[in-house]
Length: 230
Length: 230
Image (cartoon, each protein chain N blue to C red):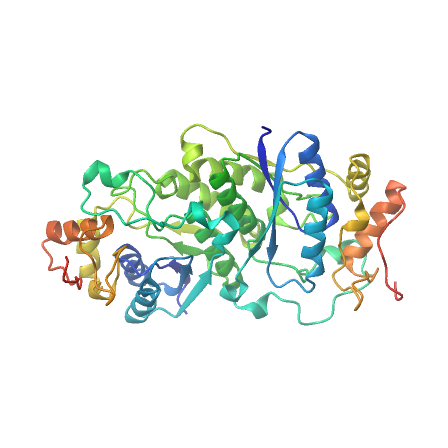
């Protein structure tokens, strides 16, 4: 039996690549995604499709109760910003922001891992494209790993949890190149913050722009299905 | 305006005392409780009542989606053990066990604190009565505090989160003495794992036994409403 890993999946490009890497390292992968008021349920559908395509053992969705934080502070009621570049893109809170997000996600992953007897957690955080996120930095991940080993019975008994972040120092182009080499079908992944009524990508939100740039820089054809306005 | 604190409340004796201590230290208290398949909703009703009695500013319940872990590993389907003592009591997983529990609870508290601009979190963990719990130890709490300061924008900007654990080294009797001095009405709190149909305490489960012993050792009258079998 292979070792089990819990892999956090979002339906996007980064986490799909992370899952492919975990599989390539020989783990049986148990995928966890979160429903927390995203604009489009299609993201979770993509996560499920990706988990199947890449041969995950299981896929589970956790409902995160955002009302607990007072929803209005979180869910983007306004328009999704379009055609922003560089520094401008890094400023402001994205529409999918959840306070203490990766801390909460990893805590659920840790809980599931504890139940299953898994000691490897994979998360597709990246410190390059969105360097402003505190919970995407290597020092956050290191602190979480320390915590995981103190928080659980298994950790106390001498087993060691590892938080794997294989993308943390890669550019979007490098991520795409890596995943393509591992057979990821990026046409199944989903990044757009503001799709049209057919769930086609807008091509202009921050997430679409980063994704387009990544494919361009990698020299790989972009399989994203864009809408007519893109 | 007073400083705000997020206080984790369970409806039990320890967290009520923790709330009273936070209030006595001058904090405006925002209480958070969790619904995660406890046997009895009365526990959450107690948490609400306690929060009002002790003058909390707000009380919120977070639904924790336990199905994500595969419920059967968690929810005690069997009978609640009765009349156990000492070492025997410390063994085995209590019916209210949640994997990575305090990690998940603190992560939601951290998220709410981040939204509110609060930097003080109170949790009534105790390393004396249940010394077997890894996530009740001072080193777990210290690691969580380190994490909180790395996980959040506020932490990165130099503000400092503090995880307060005022009960961590106290015996049950000391906790009761302390709370009584601060005006906690322990008749409002709720500890029993196996109440009768009138929500009266059984008097024999681990939690009832610890509570009874605490009142006896503190020399304070036990206000718990016990059922006829107690």
